[in-house]
Length: 425
Image (cartoon, rainbow, N blue to C red; front, side, top):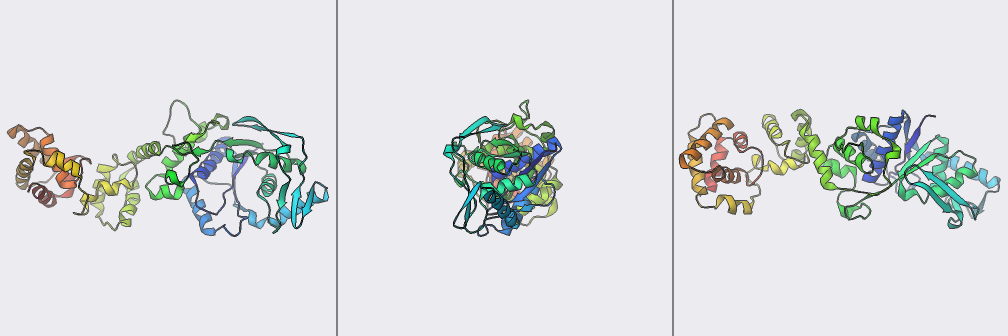
């Protein structure tokens, strides 16, 4: 039996992280088993569905590295099929009309058993389920009914989705039974929660893939992190490519415990991926952030800065703030750093002396700058911190950054001396 799964987004908004995770897990299972993942667009809500959201969803899936088999299926194009299936149940005496709506009559006193791959056995009594709408009074299909019709027509073997759908599953099983259809296997994943244990929402920060893309997260890192929410490749492995995950993924290994979305963990994973990227790979991503802020920079300078800073940033967007002092004189000054390192007794004098010696340097390379610094330290019996910290503050306004002497070389002799002498006033 060929495994067939589906991802079924509604084009009524951007791709939520939870939906992206559902798509990813379905995709991993399909690829691991040599099966297929279909894409079904649940666009029965003609008022809220929008082509621009669909385009974004498809683009975000591709950005994450996910693909699908065949062309997407649109529920809005299948209304006649749903009405036909409802009419068959009506004719068979299993459903009834209420005005223009068609409802399935639920047999009471039964227990429906769901042998869930992740949660184990789940039992629901039909006394808790009211008669189910199949076709609404406006002629559109109800979610649970058209979902079953499609999954059966498309020969879906495994339905993998969030456990917020557990309440829908017994209702859908009733439809499978009523139409004499074989049941697929069900796997309900625990939802992603915020750090506070509540359902992940806007109040926890960004919740759409689009927002993380704009904030400088790499697709490999986001996919890596989403895969680890509720699943582990073993051996405490935390950095894993999609191709590696395909080989190791098993649906039975998914946890039934809710996962908490840890933004700091995602940032750490993202930083690990940035570290191994080449300058050529990072350049267009970083340039896009600079362009957003109207910052123009020559390619050679940008490449030098990327080489210096790519091991120090957690997102590509971080680059802009960390390197702002290279592009403008209007950059933030760390006041606490100024008090601690610049205003400390003797440090302004050290800045003047360092600037004076650098003035005599013909080759303004990081090697020569370091040599001048060490010479002053030896001659004046100074600690490195008495020159390096105030100089870093003087040229960048920050207490952190890349190697000081490399920063000074990229910034250039004229600008370095100007800032050092101004700070030393």
